[in-house]
Image (cartoon, rainbow, N blue to C red; front, side, top):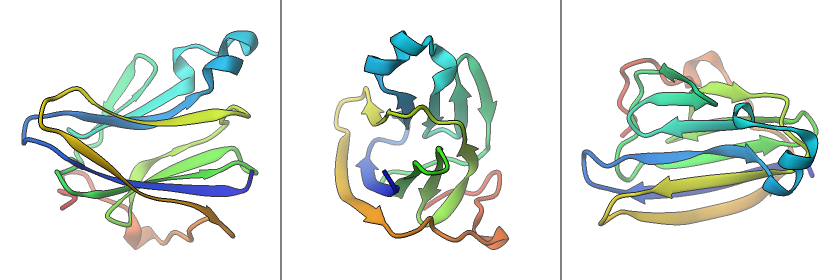
Length: 138
């Protein structure tokens, strides 16, 4: 319930890939007929994948960047932040139960959970806070 914030950092080699995102909880997805479209992934090399559709944002996440996923359950939405700038995707129409994930399939990769918090209200966003294509996040 309410607005939740999940912050983490990943430390990885230059060519390693980190995947993070949000997915409908498995326990409800099969009962309600959700499929791959209910999964949103952001990849460290700058791509966003919703189901089988992949878009290139041109924004790459670097080793050590501060990444945060903010889930607003009253609005059923989520936003991604990288170093407190907004990643150019807003997830809407979330399922009632969701799971957040960070995944690394490379050796010598470390993921640190920094903070899990209940927020009083969503983070206010101004147009200057959005990451721009080809902007490196570090």
